[in-house]
Length: 137
Image (tube, rainbow, N blue to C red; front, side, top):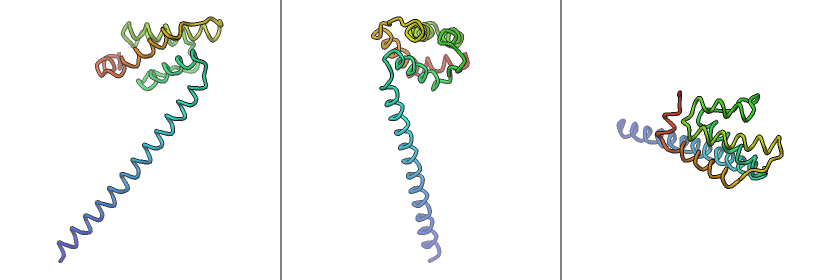
């Protein structure tokens, strides 16, 4: 009697705990999905050059290298040279300077080349080795 009652209540308690854990996890997934959807919507409304630059800033922020609001794109690119290997720093600099030229100098930019640089940055940070070597460096 007593052991059977304990096991039923333990199983019930565990099932309830599991149910709420799953519910919280699904809520968290939903919230993240909404955040990412809103972010994609916001980025989609931007001009292409600004979208590329903002996506780069987002990638770097997730990696632990946010841009300070007072930094110019050029200053941010110089700071990136201190924390990233040359190919990554070069991509950051290219995108940052192209953005500054577009934003403040009304210069056109080669968007296809900049999108390729953005893809390269994404790939570099998605590979575990580069992400580890750039942290704390």
